[in-house]
Length: 224
Image 1 (cartoon, rainbow, N blue to C red):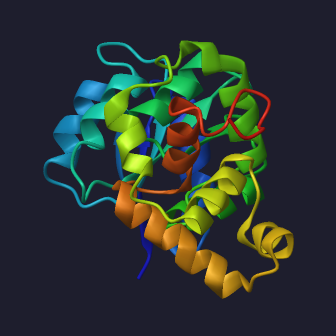
Image 2: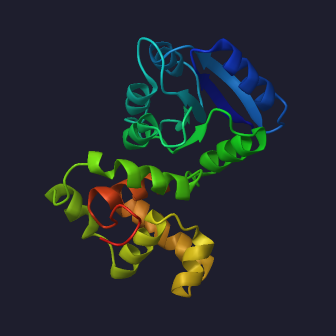
Image 3: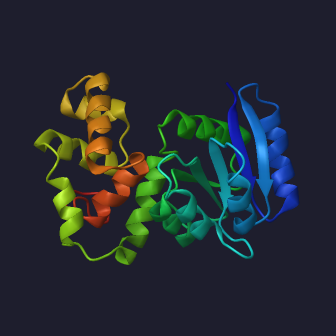
């Protein structure tokens, strides 16, 4: 079944370009478009979507607030933030709001398509190392560590799961984590799945954000 994609951007030409790229893929279908966040939320009420490509700077309702409202629903489509700059505070805010990752607007078509497929499959983190650099830069904007509710969540994890969570937050892939901990990739995948379930997180991006929020990982990527 084709991945159902929605394009949300106030630039018609940009949407047209993305639509042309996606339409050429046998496993993707652009099912909806919107020029701002208000229109996007209205369309989503009546249209089934798997992945939303979301611009951040739009009139009426920006992409960050729109993403936040979309992601309240546990069955919501995955959101990919589109940003102009590599280390953009809007992208950071988008991840905090529940986006599964972010891409640059001038991303090569092949990378965009791979990102959409990755997010749709549940792999979510488009570029973990870039996500980490983004969080390193904007870590001072996070709430002060020591907030009890967030720290108590980590108590649900085993020692091994905490170890895996730190490595995920440092931008490592399952393969890299397996090599570091001398485990099979299947075992690492199981640990990551348990972390998501125990902490009620949607994907690996949220694992990274929570690791920074709780101080499990500090700016610079090292353990807290």
